[in-house]
Length: 171
Image (cartoon, rainbow, N blue to C red; front, top):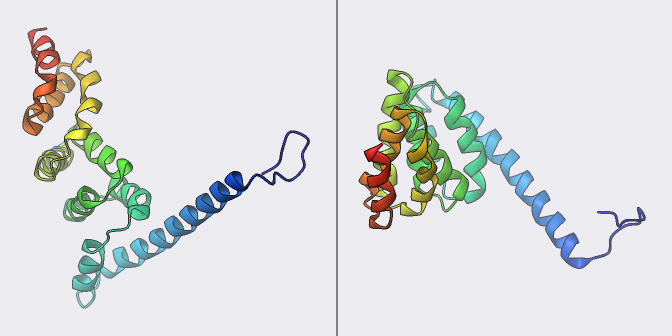
């Protein structure tokens, strides 16, 4: 980091932040490489079980970003569900946000299957903290989005949003 005059910034807090950011980026690159390797193993019947086991065992929140990227780019429903299972177990806002976004998808049959699976995971893992993300959807001009958001909120059983839910469903 540089200060306003372009000189090196010797602020220890800034240095610590820069170091933490660099470590996070390195970890994400390493996770991306591992995921790409395991994705390749899924095509090999001798390595498929090991690949699934490795993916299932991920607990590092720093794997969230590469997992989310893989989740959105993957075509295989089975692999997307496996990744969703891992995301639901990670202590990561990014992972939970991806599941919330998936819970609002459903433009085709595959998306709909993932949407229902994501809702089930949000409910099973008691991820009620995600409910506020669905509140703006209750005011969407799309009736489909309103109904989907209401469905997710209902599945998560958060009584604190009953009034906004009632108002949205009246319109």
